[in-house]
Image 1 (tube, rainbow, N blue to C red):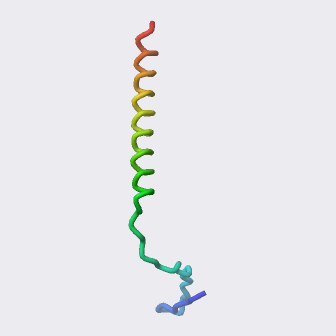
Image 2 (image 1 turned 30 degrees about the vertical axis):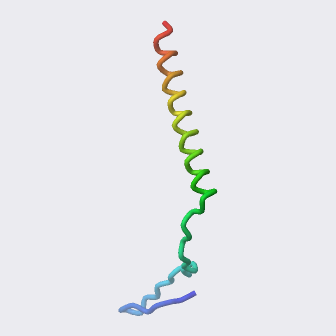
Length: 59
């Protein structure tokens, strides 16, 4: 592990850094999956809001 000496003789221990890489843009299939998951998530949130409203107005 890399150590550095500071003033007064103190040692600092730094974590090793991970290798950096360039992110690739999503392809057409990944974009389609993102859209599908977004629609699915929005539908689930809407359904939960509907169920909460229904339950609160039953009594």
